[in-house]
Image (cartoon, rainbow, N blue to C red; front, side):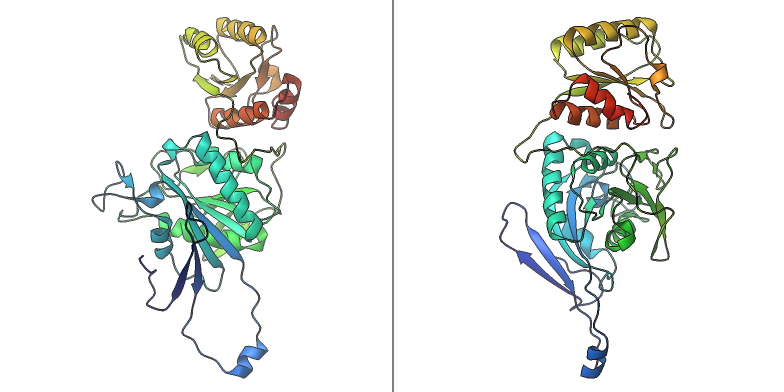
Length: 379
């Protein structure tokens, strides 16, 4: 085990051997300062918040073969390695950490999401806040799922990652992880649901999305804005604590490993309607999300086919949008045979998919699903 930088004796890392499947470590910082008994009695320190870090892999846990490689790297670092790379947090929080799994986020499935949700909930029940290290490729999906399924008890859950591997000459992982820990320990972060912190910005996990495949400034929430930023080791929020409008809390069982099958079809010129037939007839999907052109526009023939098939099989169809910003309002929906056609509002296709999965998993009928999406100005 590699000790964090800062000299010997700075950290005391103790393994909790009660859970063999998920090794858990506790990190307590020690200082070399000395003081008199009188000075200790005069200043009784406030209890530091205890933050649990859950490692899941991603670029932040990756190494390349050279200092300039920023593509084609592999996940091979554990949460212990990541902890060792960040500065001393002894005046901010006490850290516990655990490796839940160690995957590139493109490999995360519903099974991993449900596992992470269960471990995060357990961590919330026993700690003052949670930090999750995660790959950026599907971070927005995980953050949305957790935001919709966790019982936060007003405690912060902060997801962070990096755009460059740990071996890069300008790796951003250590800074992002450090900032996430400080954000999670800050009292101002309570009551905000899932937060995503990268590149000095703090965003809502409910709305934020990856907007750039390469840049450090990769996560945006254009129409809804950032919640705050991180400057000179200080957390600054622009607004008081609040949860997103229309946010619904769903229950998931620890025994579940799957969710109803919902797919996304990307609309374009000359869209082949046979894809819809295949999804319904051969894949037996429970729902479909259409990444539409514009604010819900699809060819007339595609609208007609979606209306007919959805009514015949009782399959909800969500109209989302290809564009990163904007929304699909109810007024954009087809006027005929539209009982199972639902406007996705502000949610992008990948978040619409998760919300529809959660609705179907909860056994909601089409009227209730429509009402849920109305919370994000769709329906």
